[in-house]
Image 1 (cartoon, rainbow, N blue to C red):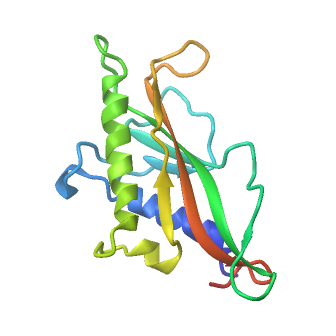
Image 2 (image 1 turned 135 degrees about the vertical axis):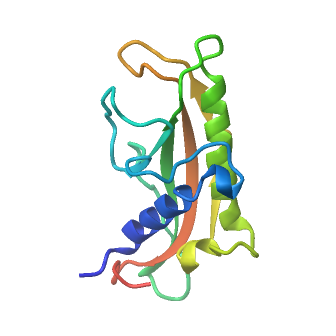
Amino acid sequence: MADPKRLRVLKAISALLQQVTVANGYQHDLSGAGRVVRGRLTFGANAPVPMVAINEPLNPDREARRAGTTGHIAREVWSLLIQGWAADDYENPTDPAHLLMADVKKALATVNVDTHANYRLGGLVGRIQLEPGTVRPPEPDVSDKAFFYLHADVEFVENTLDPYGS
């Protein structure tokens, strides 16, 4: 069976972030296995860095906007929470997390550029809006590495009668 549209969007965003490599003009390499994950909140000490996780925040979408003349076609603004962990820097622990967040922002922003090769993630999304993001130093009981949080609002149209369709 085909994946529902939301899962296809998540997979497309993951694939886009896996293109973050030094060879592609970034400062990090997210192309390896386990570097970009979906739906994971906890990670062990052996998790690779840099690493990015894509999750949904606790508060779900509140309001779908009707698109078109039928009530089952909705323009969605889907909020995603992107979190990233970077290598350690003892003297300035958050610097690597700022650099990683900049690479992730740069990659996601390409979705909004009409000439980009991954034009709007294969037609799945209209655009992605990014919030400024925040970086946190290592915190006991949270993470032994600096990390960032970044909200991304993904806009797309969904047929609620056929979530597996286009």
